[in-house]
Length: 339
Ligand SMILES: [Zn+2]
Image 1 (cartoon, protein in one colour):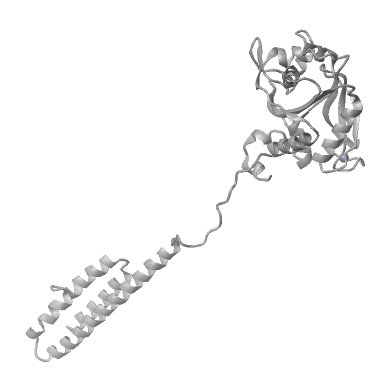
Image 2: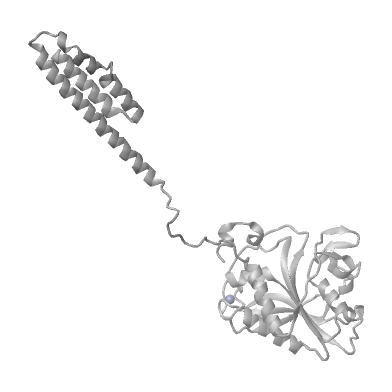
C-alpha cells in the first residue's frame, strides 16, 4: 500500500508539472483529490485496512494529499505568471506619450524647383501662365512658325489626338495664348507638363516638364536675355553662373541660341559631367521671330522680345546629380524620399 501511494505521488508530480493549462490542472485535481479521486478513495477506505497499516497509510496519504494540492497551486501560479509575461509583450498603453505622426508625403523635386523658379521670376516682374495639355495643332506648331511641311515637325515626335489636336510637345503654345491675350509690354513664364511620342531611356521621357519664358517690350535685345538668364540661373543654382551662347536652331526665334552654363561641379576646370569642356548645355533661347509676333498681331517694327525654354528635369538632374530621367515618374519611394 505504501508503495502504491508513492507511485501515485510520482505520477501526480509528473502530470502536474507538465500541465500547461488551468483546465488540465483542474482535471488532475479532480482525478486525485476529487470526491471520487484516487487519493480520496484510498483515504476513505483506510478504515478497512489492517490495524498496523492504518496509521502509516493515513499519515502518508494525507501528506501526499497536501503535497498534490500545494503542487497544483504552485503550477497554477507559474502558468499565471507566464500568461502575464506574454500579455506584457503585446501591451499597448493608450495613455502613453507618442511622437507626432510621421508625414512621409512631400513635394516632388520637380515641383519644388518649379515653385522656386516661379518665385525668382515673379521677383523680376514675370507672371505665371498655364495652358492646356491637349493643344490645337495650330498653337503647338503653325503659330510658332512651324508650318505643315517644315522639318521642325519631325524634330518633335508627337502624340496626335486627331488631325487638329495634339498633346502639347512643348510649353511654347502658351506663349501664343499669352501674346493673344496680353498687350505688350509684358513678361510671362509658363511652367508645365509636355509630351513626346518617344521611347524612354536615361535621358528621354515621354512625359516631362518645361519652363518657358517670354518678355515682349520695346528695344529688347540679346543683352536683356543674357542678363535675365544669368540672374535666374545664379539664383536657382545658388552660385555665380557664367553663361555662353552658341547659335542654335529653333523656328520660333531669330537668332536662335543654345545656352550653356559654367560647370557647377568643377568651376570650368573640366570634369566628367561637363565632358571636360567646363560648360554644360542647358537650354534654348533667342529673340522672338518676327513672324511669330506678326501671327499674334504684334508689330515687330515696334516691339521685340526674347524667349527661352528648358527642361525642368535637366535642371533637377544637374542640381542633384541624378543620372536617369526615368526616376522622376518611376514611383520608386527610395528615390522620392531622398528629397
Ligand atoms: Zn565640370
